[in-house]
Image 1 (cartoon, one colour):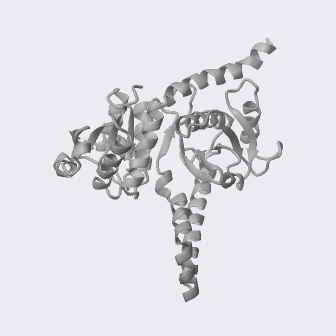
Image 2 (cartoon, helix red, strand yellow; image 1 turned 90 degrees about the horizontal axis):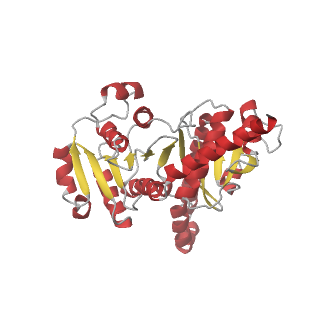
Length: 348
């Protein structure tokens, strides 16, 4: 990777597209000099909008298509009938080597279906997983899977651990991230068969992963580990619960400061600290879920985000590109295979 990646954009995906997409891309260009874009969407709509961002226009190639994937389209329908949609063409650009990654704020199910069909999974990976950031007391952690795989076996969980480890090193810049398996207790006998079997494999001394062991739900916000691994059902419930709790906390605090005159006066003294807190919990800061395990980089932005959130999603894709995420992952997969084969070789 030259350090100047090209990102394919689904300009028509998202509740506030295409204006939000282009504004976010313009922010990303300012943050990442040398970045280039392939922009896929309705040219008569995009051309005048793009003209408002000269800096972005100078580094963008616009590719016209009048088709788009709608938010309520079923993934199977989008996969069959959306071959000329802005989402599909952006993914195709990655598969054809024209772009280093794709970013879309469109339909999550359709994006996953298309990306898996077009990009395929890496050798040694059975299923792709959805990963994203999570704020903790210690900074940020990575959590996966967040909904792509409702039921997982031990092999899936071990592969997710490897994916999360490589992602944490590439995007968070961690040299040796710690990995934990989410469970109902820290004891070895706790959990279902898949979790216990995955734990045994991850404890292999030849494994490339720094395995912490089992963690519980309260370890997630505590930042006990850098990478939280779980099945898609549990992960999706956990992250939605956390998002709802953060929103509830914000609403309670706002209500408390409106309660009385003295509370309003107190707000005047606390407003700088509260502003810092809002920034720390701002979901736009953690925008950019990644489909890990594919042969290309695919990032899903939240559909209702604004330009700042979309710029952050682009930043995730850029970090993965310039830090050689896929190359690192291939090396780790080889090491994991070697670790799995070692006990068998010793037995022979």
